[in-house]
Picture 1: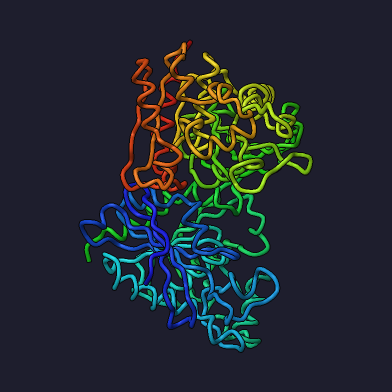
Picture 2: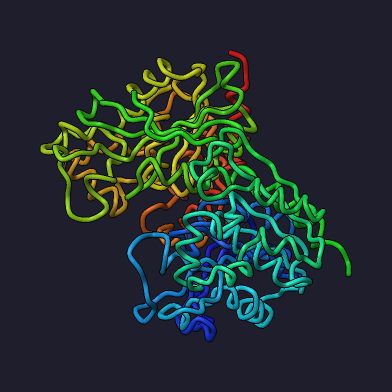
Length: 278
Length: 278
C-alpha cells in the first residue's frame, strides 16, 4: 500500500492509496478518509461504490462526505469502479469495460481474468483496510447508480457482512434494463439464469437477513425510468416484507449535486447501526 | 443570459448561466446558486473568485458552499477566472492569460482589450445579478489564491460596495511574489508604481473603510512561503489598525479539501454583516 495523496480535511485526512490487487490482477487506487476520531480509537467503515465512468476521485472531491464522516467518526473507503491498466480488456462506450465493472465477478472471456470487482470490494479490500487502518469490523455500504447496484448486491449476497446498505439512484434490476443487460451479457454470458445472482430485485426475494435499506432517488433523474426503476425494488421488498426506505426527491437529477444534498442523511442512517455494540 | 446548467442542490438550485460580457468582449459562464429562501424573498449575495487554472466549475462542484448558502439564505455568484474564447489572447503556462486574469483591468497590449476582470466582477456582474435574480444590494466577496487576491482588491478599491471580505490562501502582495510579478508586468507594464493599485498590502495602507476581513491559510500549503505570504497582510493591517482575522490551519494544503473544511465558517463570518439592516 502506497499513499499517493494526503490532504487534511475536516480535521481528518483524505488520502488516496495505491496497491497491487491480487483479485483484479492490476494496480488500483482507493480513496480513504480517516476521521479525526481514528487517531485515538478504531472506527467503523463505510464503503462507497461510484457509478459509470467514475474513478476513486469523484466521490472524494464532490460529495462532501468528509464533513459527515468527521462528525460521526467513520472511515470512508472509496474504490475505483473497475480494474485498470494496459493489460485489462476494455470496450468502446462508457458502459462496458474500464469504468464500468458493475461490481460483479465476470465469468466470460476476455473479462473474467480481471473483472472481479465483487470479490475485490467484499473480500480483498476489507482485508487491506483491517491490516492498514484503525478500523472496527462494523461495516456499511453505499453507492451511486451502478455503484448503488453494487452496494445492494454486495450486501444481499453476503449476510452479516454489512450492518446497513443505502444507495443513491441505484440500478436495482440490471437484468431488466439496457445498461445492465449489455454488461451482464458480456461479463456473465447469454444464460440469463446466471444473472439473478447479481440482481438486487432477485436477491431480495430470497434474502435471509432483514438488512436496513435506504434509497434516495432524484425525481428529475434522466435515467430514472429507463435504467434505474427503483419502484421495482420497492415491489420486490414489499413482496417478502423486506425493509426499504425509498425517498423520491422532486427536482433532483443524477449528479453529485444530488448526492451532496442528502449524503448527510445517509450517514445518520448508517450510524444508527454502526454505533450499536454487538 | 442563457441558463446552461440547472441542478437541484440542498433545496435550492445550482445553475450555470452564459452571457455576452460587454466589459470583457467575450462569452462568459457564471455559476449561480439560488438558495431555497430566494423563492420567497430577495437574498444577499456572496461573490466567489476562484484561483489559477480554474473555471466557474471548481467552486460549485468541490466546495460544498451550497450546504451553507441554503442554511443562511444567500445567493452565491461564482464567475470564471478570465475572459474566454478564440479572440482572447493567451500565453504559455498556467499563470498568465486564460485562467489567470488576476481580477485586474489590464492596460497593456495585447491584454487590455479583454482582460478587465475587475470591472467585470465589480460592476457588470452585479448589474446582471440585480437584473436577473432576487438579490438585495447586500454583498460580500471571497476567493481562493489568485481569487483571494481578487476579492481583497475588489473590496479595498471599492469602499461601500461589499460588507465584508474573506479569502482562502490569498496572494496578498502580488507585487512581491513570482506569480504576481509575472502577471502584473504583462498586464500592467514595467512601471511598478502602477502595480500598487492592485496590491492588497498597498491598498490596505490607505483604506478609508474598516471592512471586516477574514483569512484562512493552510499551514502546509505548498505556496505559502513563495507566493501567498499572508503575514505581509497581517503586518500591513496592523500598521494602520485595519481589522484582520487571520487563521493559520496546521496540516491543510492549497486544495479544495481545505476550502470545503472551512467554507462554513466563512459563511457565518459574512452573514454577521449581510444580515444587518442598513
